[in-house]
Image (cartoon, rainbow, N blue to C red; front, side, top):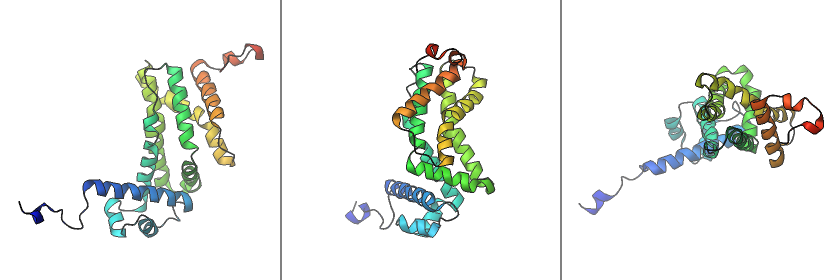
Amino acid sequence: MSAPMLKRRAGRPTPEEAEQKRQGLIVTALEEFARVGFHGASLRDIAEKANISSRTLYNYYPDKLALFEACLEFSGREIQPVLPDLDVGLHEGLVRYAIAMQRQLFAAQAMRIAALIYREGGGFDELRQIARIQFERHQVTPVAHILDSHGIVKERCHILATQFVAMAFGEWQRRLLFGEDAMTDEQMADHAELVTAIFLKGIDPWCGPVASHPQI
């Protein structure tokens, strides 16, 4: 086969190059959405900052909503590698997961995206629906999987997981709404231990004299 036939057609990227370009677009879009909000973000500006043409952007995502959904999916997947080893006990597994999730949620960009959803999602059903899907997929479902792996009745795993997530990330939500500082690593660990203990055992151990309260 002659040398010219071995050459890749000029201007056509390899699948690897195309994926790198798409990932770069997502990272750039996340930064832009976090900086100026959903309504303030311009697809033309995002394409320019990602060093791609507007046509290429639209080939990947037909509109701003589709691009934002891809950004939330990308952001949500960031926590998956830190899902705890399911061989550990249920208490330890939930604590590890809560700590890992809090670290991800308190990241500066994640806080800005969450604030965007709170600020703009109220009057934008599509944006709120995308956030709900990501919440189910990347926060509730992993907890349900942990519960299921430890023998919790499968039919109850989802509702129990939803309650655990509400408890575990309530402090993050409070700090986000009131503009308070992120929790330190020590505070995250203490909070995860407390929430997990209450979730699994109830508040009875904390209702007696202070000296008899369990250590966490």
